[in-house]
Image (cartoon, rainbow, N blue to C red; front, top):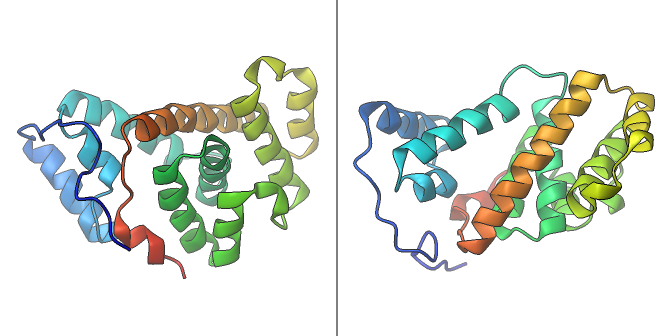
Length: 189
């Protein structure tokens, strides 16, 4: 598959990055085999890049009652609803890798309702997609459904925060026509 060499549709040259940020990019290359294009896209402004990476790392990698896989599942379901090419491809790959199940990553990327999910995961993704699609309609019954599925109030906060983060990220990636790294297409297959 051929990709346009342009990372995004905007002409924003990379800033002179600090040694700390260059070391972070090197760590990504070491651990992932690539520097995610979303990081390269934000590299025009190191302050914005740092805000993005700090918040992402706190939401997606820090201690939580939600597993890393559950957080990635939310990312994919929200991104699929928003039709965000970059995030569907990148986070669908992560779901495939973390779950060891290529079908799960691909199915969530198209329609999470078609995936064989546990009641807990179905409730989590129903909430995330409802919060994405019709946030004004989210109410006490939705929160109670998550509690009934076994989520604590802290976990509900994390589901909500991950959902909100990916709604923001989806809009930036889509509006700038951000291209996913080619490596994502073959990960976890």
